[in-house]
Length: 353
Image 1 (spheres, helix red, strand yellow):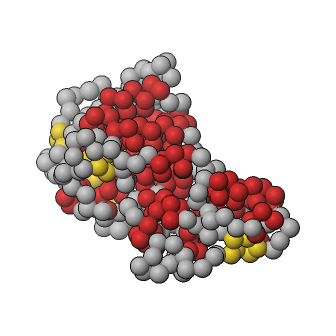
Image 2 (tube, helix red, strand yellow; image 1 turned 180 degrees about the vertical axis):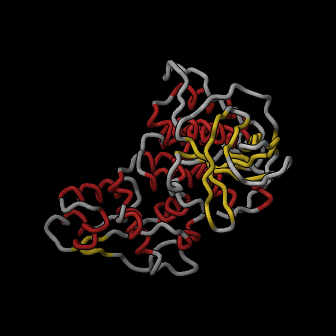
């Protein structure tokens, strides 16, 4: 992913030499043109690593390394971490590199925790520690007032599964902000950040985690005492996966009928039973009807007589409200309902998950 230079070139800092250990099966990939090259990691610490490689990198060279389990290059971000590194020295077997982590990063490799009585040396453990440190550093940069609470929550307060979700939410929000070209002069509402990390960490579905990341990225406030609207956080926390699919389907359908000057469809939107079954991934019409009713009660779907009898009819009215369209836009990192048509996540995408 190509990111704006103004965001990508963050202030980097060197770390003092830390304890180095071997992590069996850990590899560091680099790109040789369009070809990924794999280098075995002989040992690694929080501040650097020694790579067994024949690459002729010179002292002072900056390289981009992707840490992951050895094998095929991982496609999922959760299983890899890309870090900038500076070559320190070279010998006959390989090179020693120092990691250039964003300022504020606190990588804690080989440190025992309450959850793990002994240091974890599997490649996945190493990758996750770097991702966690990067997530916390991002939060500290964009909302310093929430850094202590976020560190306490993510270092001690969440279970392993919830922690993985919270880290993905933070890192994806960072990507969204980078794509929007956000620079200095903005910050995120600390209360919204902590609430999003807490509530969003319950989901294990990737695309819903990215919805939470969108809310995080759009919780920007102006002024030191500014506060963001927690209404959308509250709404998303009350939606199940199937209900989110229905909402995505409704907003995707609405994109075709929303006038440029309006924020709501020009006419009631109906969806066939067959299409709703495809979108939701369930043939249980009674359950679909219940989920539509819940979205109506939340104020996300317009009231209609037809949704009351969907289990008996072949279609349902699923016209999204203005609030729903704006929520959908924010979940994709864009403020304002008028930007919802730019969303890359439509009903076909979520229905395929």
